[in-house]
Image (cartoon, protein in one colour):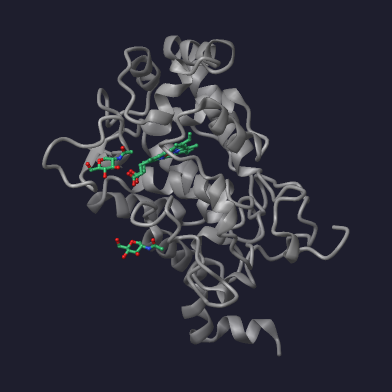
Length: 320
Ligand code: HEM
Ligand SMILES: *[C@@H]1O[C@H](CO)[C@@H](O)[C@H](O)[C@H]1NC(C)=O
Ligand SMILES: *[C@@H]1O[C@H](CO)[C@@H](O)[C@H](O)[C@H]1NC(C)=O
């Protein structure tokens, strides 16, 4: 059967319009070399899908939900730290083959913005059916969100292939707000080749501006809610300049005003003075330095691929 006849049928379009379905992923990122190590490129869709309508969908969505840019940035992070940036976070349950990553503790009732991702996918399927991968949608959405929030801009590397499996065990690599030992955070970042500077720079994302907000449930904060507050009550991640993407986050750390235990540990851990603390001081005193490093770390994060020995052994034939 010709793939094109499937793509042009309304039923296929309907299915392709969701990143949550494995079927939708099969035709994505067409033209990508089968080699998982093929280099990404900023020009990957220049011919096949120029002027992709991603920005418009995000702009529309944030009118009614100013938290959307923050939520989309976090989805890219939670995709990349688990088995590489393969879009697998978006897959829904299709048991027994696929167990969704959306319901693991780090994501359940916490990761959000999935309908907006599907809205982007739908718009892209109308513009250029079967071309743009869902993993690339997350990378593009993260950059546009940072930009809309007044943060730095960069040219997103594209050409990721969507995964066809989830990896619920590997979600253990998602950092927890209760990781109160710096070594634990460093280990999780190190597992995906991210270093101390990446750790400090990416934590600065908590400042999302222009009437956008990054929120946290009070159960994850250092004060663990106030009396009578339900565990899921939302607070600003940034208590000082909650609507601005800036370097104040690092100043807050210096004043012991970080919301999460995992934030403050970058200064308070016994090993911090020789590892993360100097970077915190640097970024606190120089916003340009922070932005430059934030971009470099976002690009590095977007390049995370499944590393050797990372997947379940049973998924890989002997010797691979
Ligand atoms: C040490 C590593 C990290 C830890 C422990 C951590 C933890 C958290 C927690 C607990 C929340 C609040 C979730 C909720 O209340 O439901 C949150 C929100 C958020 N995180 Fe992280 N995070 C880390 C790194 C990152 C990185 C690397 C990024 C992106 C580059 C990121 C982006 C965000 C954003 C944008 C939000 C706000 C989301 C929203 O309002 O919907 N985080 N993070
Ligand atoms: C996810 O959250 C829902 C609603 O709070 C809860 O009913 C469900 O058990 C949770 N799922 C998992 C896998 O923990
Ligand atoms: C936060 O408080 C709740 C309710 O008092 C408690 O059940 C929970 O264990 C606390 N969380 C932490 C991390 O201490």
